[in-house]
Length: 117
Image 1 (cartoon, rainbow, N blue to C red):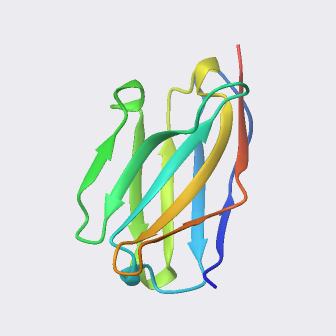
Image 2: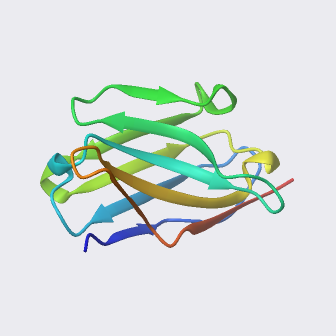
C-alpha cells in the first residue's frame, strides 16, 4: 500500500506564501501524474495543479501565476509553492498520486491552509 503524506499547511495572511510538500512511500516514477487538490467547506474537491511523470504541468485558472507545482524525484516529493494567497484559497489541500497502469489513486490525509484577510 502506497502512503502519501502532505505537510506544510498553516495560517497565513492574505498576500503571504506557503509551500506544501507531498511525499510518497514509493518512487514517484511509478505514477503517471501527481496532483494537488483542495476542498473548501461545503464544496467539492477540485484540482489545483498537477504534474506528469514527464514534468508537464497544468493549473486551475484561479491559481495560475500564483502557484507552482514541482517535484524532486530523488526525494519522492512533490511541492506546491503558493504565493499571493487569498482568503478564497482557504481549504484542505490533498495530494493525489495516480497509477494509470494499476488504475489506482492514492490520497493523503490532507493539510489545512487558512488565509486570513
